[in-house]
Length: 108
Image 1 (spheres, one colour):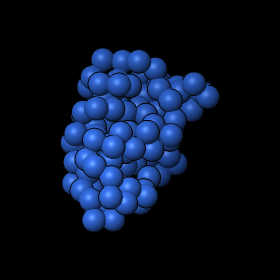
Image 2: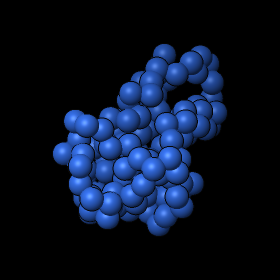
Image 3: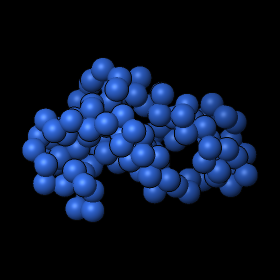
């Protein structure tokens, strides 16, 4: 769960919805800007163990989950105020997706 100004967002539900909308790629690929990426749109950072690995390098489901949770936490706090849960989840999806685009893919 991610807590936002008195509201709680279910991180598992957010991951499920983003995976359904955007897909999840369990290997390193290049995003639309040519940056190494994997999972649910995680940009490979210099601090990631995947940094410098070749495109196509497999990434475990556990690692994808870890990076997703870290990415979602970094994109907070968001201004939800007294929003209902459906609007809060939609806002979370849009805020997460603002971090970058990824090609359509099957769920991890």
